[in-house]
Image 1: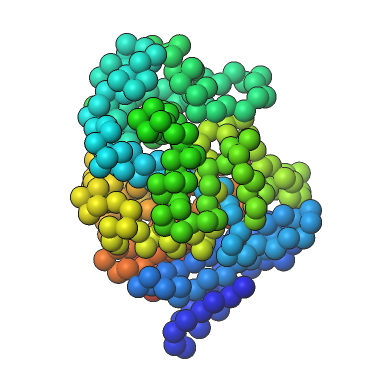
Image 2: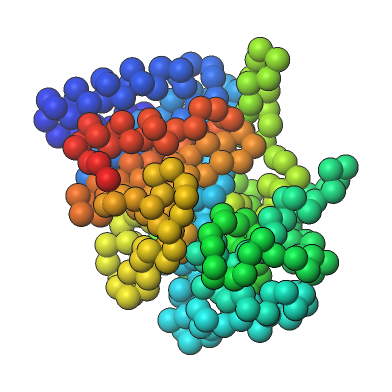
Length: 340
């Protein structure tokens, strides 16, 4: 499906993007691309296959595993609960998860949101021989047995999947609802995001699901789930271009979060040593005028770039292990004159 709006210049951009996306087309694992300008699709097209084995093509309704783009949804849940008065950003995490070791005494929810907690990455704690999937509650159990930290909380930055898994559990404790249920009732349904869900083993199916693939031994092979794919808070949400357009719209007004909460989410909480990430907010990487996040997990590589002052957003979702689409999304944004 192709949607292009505007003048001859926009049509020329479409031809250029199609050229850049050639490797995703045909019977290869695919991609979906959306450019939003002033809240409307300036370009929208899907390429290739959502499921190669059945020949099911990718469409704008295809639901991709967002991986770490999920973190901005987890952060939004926490901010909603702050607005409810159910918790505070400066709550010690052990107020909500008291079984964490005493080494986490100084860790606050703010530290978890901004990757400044110093907590050990749970992926380094999962036994190599383990085949059963890890869930958010298992992350807590792994950290309960881990006294050490990378650094004193608040003193440094280190990207932390552990922190966002714990935040999902805090959302559950503070709200009395399962994390997936809280997302559904407080975020997805109010925004009309009917094609978005946190995938649970016993929960609703992902109706238009893209399956992940990796190029191995000279051919595409399905690599859709890993040991850590069931952790929700750091990366377990599936969504489509259509729904992510609704998510983008919610960052321009008060339909979900208040202006002060939205400002907090994209406020530079800490500087980072990462390329093209001058600062990190709450679930958002910040580089000049650009707010963005990537999402990488087995078989999926995604990126979402927002330029709020230009009211321009570029989203690239892919169900393959490579390449990482960040540079591609930056080139697409540059076609509309958007740079950090």
